[in-house]
Length: 116
Image 1 (spheres, rainbow, N blue to C red):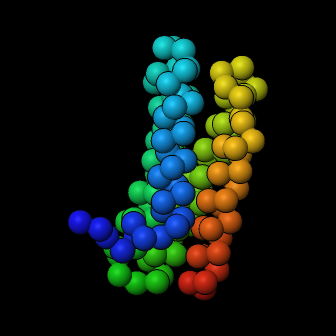
Image 2 (tube, rainbow, N blue to C red; image 1 turned 60 degrees about the horizontal axis):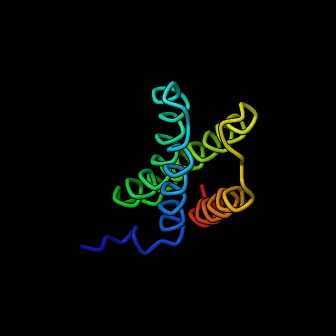
């Protein structure tokens, strides 16, 4: 069954980002399983999850609030990617950085469209 939120480009791009984060963190050392690996995966999953949940709430005000949560999770993920790179666990590749920036821009556009 195809839900309304699945047609949103921002949700589709966020889902793609989740897959990339899972691939990146798969290469992290076992000692990070309950640390940065878990944190990054949860932050990444939170982005499309909040988009979907907000879409299902029924009001623009609620949707906007969940989009703000999604944007917060994306910012958290961005920080974790920078941290992973500084710790030598992974390179924050330009293609991943561009994905983060694109999802951020799409979220901002939708947030602004929904207004206050």
